[in-house]
Length: 397
Image 1 (cartoon, one colour):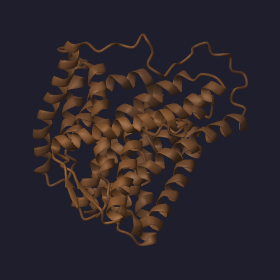
Image 2 (image 1 turned 90 degrees about the vertical axis):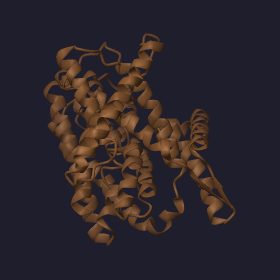
Image 3 (image 1 turned 135 degrees about the vertical axis):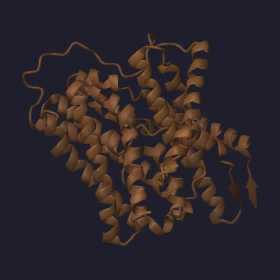
């Protein structure tokens, strides 16, 4: 039996899956501890149900995923609006250095994936599904680049990348805190530091800006304008023969509009509203991407996938310990940044924040780490990752 859902029905199921994920996160503490997003929880559970239906030959579900691409584009457009060059000034040279290090990590993750593809004898394009797409990029990039890799001939690309991203969320959370603690204790990095009085609260409190209906409308309109302009940019890029993801034009357009606003003051950018809409779009996008996974496509790749992901964990450990920690100063702040790097280097920015918060609650606050990691993780990483991944895909296609 095949159950066919249209565009609106698919959106409704995605919303229900999102609510299910939030419910489970509230009642199963380990899910919140590892910062596993609600759409990932609900989406994976739903995909397990569809796997059961497929393996028993009882039912299959066919989704109309038209709105998935719209939500994906809206999210990456909101990322583009956050890519302000003015932000680099706030973090100074340490932020610039850290962004350069992350670009290096992105390159290494893809090179390790390609190297492993030759060792174990799988397609290089398939190996990219375990590189920076799911590691630095997380579930968002996994869902975005999956169809692109599938079009290049990788069957089950989205399922493989999503599985790798889920593994990365857990691995990044398990790796970051213990590594940071070991560095702090081994090198006695808290010695001589005065008690820090600034208490950093990474959670939204009562003083957080509230959404006004008028500003929300303007923020949505700015997103829509950037998405519209982005279609022309994407068309122009396509004429060059290069294969970029569909959202890249909108992300570039949003970045241009943001920096024009910063440079001229001609118009305001509604950052808070755009970020909230982008977050909602990401949640729905992830819910649709994960609930439509065809997990049965992973069975034949179980051992190669485990080997490639193990190599990524080893890379992340060595890179964080012997590159990030010494180059960021080999001090207490550097140790906290190292723990955060493991979080979003194999998962997502919330994982990075959770890793750092666990350490700062035990030891001392780190204003520097809580400035650098969110700016780099939220604004610049996805931008550079998209460009680098696209380069590798075009090179190998």
